[in-house]
Length: 214
Image (tube, rainbow, N blue to C red):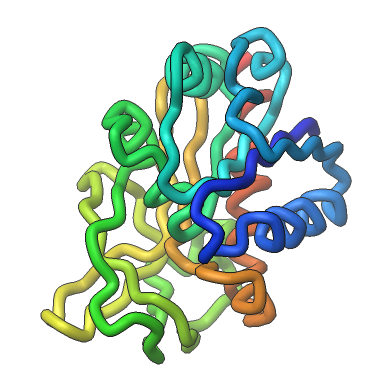
């Protein structure tokens, strides 16, 4: 399995450290991982075509030129999986609505900053969440705009308005698989076993779609 992690953007989300955590999880699962700290990694489509997985860890920022077109084409037309966490994928490239449509959601607010909250597993049969129970985290609780077609795996009850908000989901985009978890504000949060297990399994699920798309 070939994976590319592209990291950078807003420094508050520790993109370099989070990228290292995600790279370690993939390498422990046997993946060959390339890492890039520049969006120039998306300048050309050809290098992306052979990838099984793309992991953006890039809060905010802006896709320039053909970068957005190439990234979306790698997933939709060539079957690469895409997976990510927190603002690194759920608040990346705010001006690129096509990217947000692919992800299936976009960050709106996290009232109160870091708080204690519970994550509820709602699909216990899925391979990503199998064997996991509800668990507690201390992090930013993301309120997001979300696509109702997402296959939601975990939710939380948002403190400030009581709504049920998806935390973890999966979906397809053309030939590719998309996985997202709003957990993982900073690298230390992956010390919660469930947080790391979910993203590791999610990344592997997204990558596995490449073979099915051929």
